[in-house]
Length: 90
Image 1 (tube, rainbow, N blue to C red):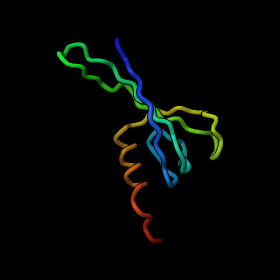
Image 2: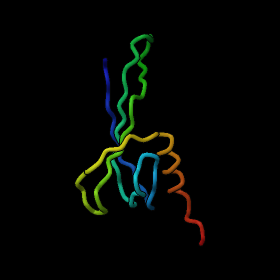
Image 3: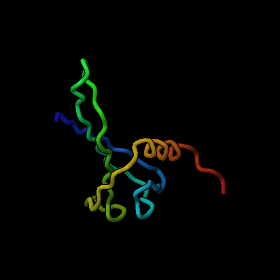
Image 4: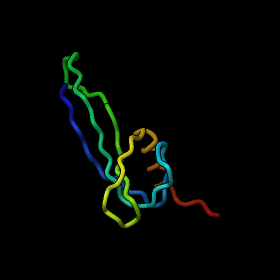
């Protein structure tokens, strides 16, 4: 099986929560890794996503990674879009 891993950093301006978290995460930058496998039965290079993981820190400002959580990439995209919206007045 041929697999590849891609990594990107996402940044949240406000605290956020995704399915699979046990608590909201603070604003900041997070590393997201996606593993994909090469589909061998097609005549052109195509990949299928196997997993998407986000690395969570133990506390704000602590660069030590303590947990990696599987996430839904669509849910991540939605959370990033919400974070990019202007804050609503209280």
